[in-house]
Length: 125
Image (tube, rainbow, N blue to C red; front, side, top):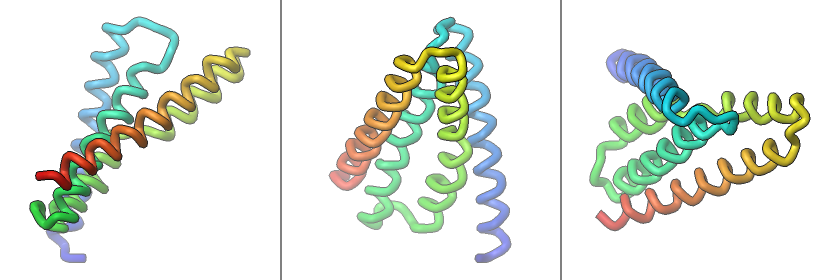
Protein backbone atom coordinates (compact mmCIF):
# COMPACT_ATOMS: atom_id res chain seq x y z
CA UNK A 1 0.00 0.00 0.00
CA UNK A 2 1.38 3.37 -0.94
CA UNK A 3 1.58 6.12 1.68
CA UNK A 4 -0.88 8.35 -0.20
CA UNK A 5 -3.47 5.54 -0.32
CA UNK A 6 -3.12 5.06 3.44
CA UNK A 7 -3.67 8.79 4.02
CA UNK A 8 -6.71 8.80 1.73
CA UNK A 9 -8.16 5.79 3.53
CA UNK A 10 -7.72 7.42 6.93
CA UNK A 11 -9.16 10.76 5.83
CA UNK A 12 -12.06 9.15 3.98
CA UNK A 13 -12.95 6.94 6.95
CA UNK A 14 -12.95 9.97 9.21
CA UNK A 15 -15.13 11.91 6.77
CA UNK A 16 -17.61 9.03 6.60
CA UNK A 17 -17.81 8.84 10.40
CA UNK A 18 -18.31 12.62 10.61
CA UNK A 19 -21.11 12.47 8.04
CA UNK A 20 -22.75 9.63 9.96
CA UNK A 21 -22.62 11.74 13.14
CA UNK A 22 -24.33 14.67 11.39
CA UNK A 23 -26.95 12.57 9.58
CA UNK A 24 -27.71 10.61 12.76
CA UNK A 25 -28.20 13.82 14.73
CA UNK A 26 -30.47 15.38 12.11
CA UNK A 27 -32.58 12.23 11.74
CA UNK A 28 -32.93 11.68 15.49
CA UNK A 29 -33.99 15.28 16.06
CA UNK A 30 -36.65 15.04 13.37
CA UNK A 31 -37.95 11.50 13.85
CA UNK A 32 -38.22 11.56 17.65
CA UNK A 33 -39.02 7.89 18.03
CA UNK A 34 -37.75 5.08 20.20
CA UNK A 35 -37.22 2.86 17.16
CA UNK A 36 -33.74 3.10 15.66
CA UNK A 37 -34.76 4.64 12.33
CA UNK A 38 -31.69 6.86 12.09
CA UNK A 39 -29.32 3.89 12.28
CA UNK A 40 -31.48 1.92 9.85
CA UNK A 41 -31.57 4.75 7.30
CA UNK A 42 -27.81 5.25 7.55
CA UNK A 43 -27.06 1.53 7.08
CA UNK A 44 -29.51 1.07 4.21
CA UNK A 45 -28.31 4.17 2.35
CA UNK A 46 -24.68 3.16 2.87
CA UNK A 47 -25.41 -0.34 1.57
CA UNK A 48 -27.08 1.11 -1.52
CA UNK A 49 -24.13 3.38 -2.30
CA UNK A 50 -21.66 0.55 -1.65
CA UNK A 51 -23.57 -1.61 -4.12
CA UNK A 52 -23.35 1.13 -6.75
CA UNK A 53 -19.62 1.61 -6.12
CA UNK A 54 -19.02 -2.13 -6.34
CA UNK A 55 -20.87 -2.33 -9.64
CA UNK A 56 -18.95 0.63 -11.03
CA UNK A 57 -15.62 -0.77 -9.86
CA UNK A 58 -16.35 -4.26 -11.19
CA UNK A 59 -17.35 -2.75 -14.54
CA UNK A 60 -14.13 -0.72 -14.58
CA UNK A 61 -16.06 2.55 -14.61
CA UNK A 62 -14.31 3.50 -11.37
CA UNK A 63 -10.64 2.91 -10.53
CA UNK A 64 -10.10 0.14 -7.98
CA UNK A 65 -8.21 2.45 -5.61
CA UNK A 66 -11.08 4.96 -5.60
CA UNK A 67 -13.55 2.14 -4.99
CA UNK A 68 -11.46 1.04 -2.01
CA UNK A 69 -11.21 4.56 -0.60
CA UNK A 70 -14.92 5.30 -1.00
CA UNK A 71 -16.28 1.84 -0.28
CA UNK A 72 -14.04 0.53 2.45
CA UNK A 73 -13.08 3.75 4.18
CA UNK A 74 -15.80 6.35 3.60
CA UNK A 75 -18.77 3.98 3.70
CA UNK A 76 -17.11 1.88 6.40
CA UNK A 77 -17.00 5.02 8.51
CA UNK A 78 -20.52 6.06 7.49
CA UNK A 79 -22.36 2.81 8.11
CA UNK A 80 -22.75 1.67 11.66
CA UNK A 81 -23.68 -1.94 12.16
CA UNK A 82 -22.02 -1.96 15.57
CA UNK A 83 -24.42 0.76 16.71
CA UNK A 84 -27.31 -1.24 15.24
CA UNK A 85 -26.23 -4.27 17.26
CA UNK A 86 -25.91 -2.19 20.41
CA UNK A 87 -29.33 -0.58 19.92
CA UNK A 88 -30.91 -3.99 19.31
CA UNK A 89 -29.38 -5.35 22.53
CA UNK A 90 -30.70 -2.28 24.36
CA UNK A 91 -34.20 -3.05 23.09
CA UNK A 92 -33.85 -6.59 24.43
CA UNK A 93 -32.61 -5.29 27.80
CA UNK A 94 -35.67 -3.01 27.94
CA UNK A 95 -37.90 -6.04 27.44
CA UNK A 96 -38.85 -4.98 23.91
CA UNK A 97 -37.99 -8.28 22.27
CA UNK A 98 -40.44 -7.94 19.38
CA UNK A 99 -39.05 -4.49 18.53
CA UNK A 100 -35.51 -5.88 18.71
CA UNK A 101 -36.37 -8.75 16.38
CA UNK A 102 -38.16 -6.46 13.91
CA UNK A 103 -35.30 -3.97 14.02
CA UNK A 104 -32.68 -6.60 13.32
CA UNK A 105 -34.62 -8.25 10.52
CA UNK A 106 -35.72 -4.99 8.88
CA UNK A 107 -32.19 -3.61 8.90
CA UNK A 108 -30.64 -6.81 7.56
CA UNK A 109 -33.19 -7.39 4.80
CA UNK A 110 -33.34 -3.72 3.76
CA UNK A 111 -29.55 -3.33 3.77
CA UNK A 112 -28.94 -6.46 1.70
CA UNK A 113 -31.75 -5.51 -0.66
CA UNK A 114 -30.32 -2.02 -1.07
CA UNK A 115 -26.84 -3.44 -1.76
CA UNK A 116 -28.28 -5.73 -4.44
CA UNK A 117 -30.23 -2.86 -6.01
CA UNK A 118 -27.12 -0.66 -5.93
CA UNK A 119 -24.98 -3.39 -7.47
CA UNK A 120 -27.52 -3.83 -10.24
CA UNK A 121 -27.65 -0.07 -10.86
CA UNK A 122 -23.87 0.31 -10.78
CA UNK A 123 -23.40 -2.64 -13.12
CA UNK A 124 -25.99 -1.27 -15.54
CA UNK A 125 -24.07 1.98 -16.06
